[in-house]
Amino acid sequence: MLRLGMPVVGVTDIPRAVAFWSAALNLVASQTWASETWRTLDHADGSGRALGLLRSDSPPEPRPRIHLDLFTDSAEEQQSEVRRLLGLGARSVDWDLYPADPDFVVLADPDGNIFCVVDLSHAPSGAS
Image (cartoon, rainbow, N blue to C red; front, side):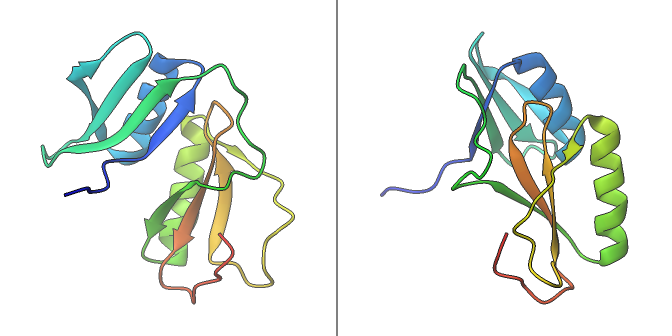
């Protein structure tokens, strides 16, 4: 039976991406699934694979069709996590597609890959 595996993010610098996403999501780099062009990040609690990092020479898309949504449970937690992620090397994105009252904040990882930090306590915007 076919089943969904994990999201894979294209990056130009595997060690930098491992450091960012491991710190951002409390993940650990797998020693089993690793090469010069691929790294698997596992959940720190040992519950399995979480994220794949693939070496890519193509530039990140400014409006990707698929992206990661990271969830928080409140506006305060969202603000705190956005500040923490910026401190880890994420950057703010000038996103002109925000709805009037967004439940999400658009950021980019150190490679420029766009992702959203979503406040689940806020009514869904449907636009992230």
